[in-house]
Length: 200
Image (cartoon, rainbow, N blue to C red; front, top):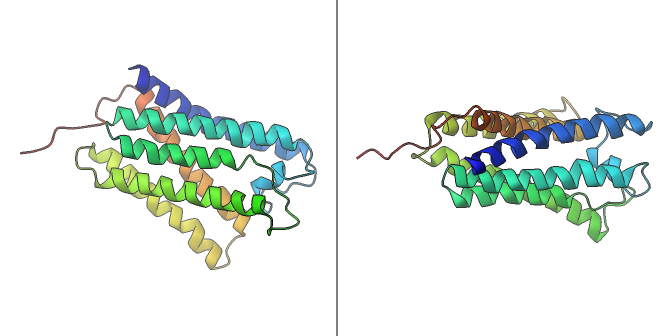
């Protein structure tokens, strides 16, 4: 029950902290556009309150996501899935390293992009593993499949020119944090259907 509670609280806290930090630091930066600027611009070198954003919006949220991933893996008794979800949190936290937006050729700027890409790849692999795990409750598997499909929509929208890449990132975050919130809320409600016995 302690592990379940840890997963639930960290999973609910991560999206909440991120949203509050985004609104707060976004409004504190008069040059920041909530729809057309990358979230990373709030923590870029020279940005106002960059340290605060990087510590709260990226590092703290990354730690919460890592805790959630490891704890949730224990709840569903699937350690590899937990590690994959934790790697997403770890990679998310690494984006706290400030980058210079004026150039993308520096090692730090490249590491920033690579970190979030690898993190998202780990998250998708975790979902894929859950969706294929017949020992999990069907609702968990369906939720994982739906989240993975929804990730594709923002990418298609960007490819077709419906919105910018920064907005695509926002929509991707919405899907990731939406899945995390729903999963954590289910744990907090005390659902005990995370696993079911194998059929003979």
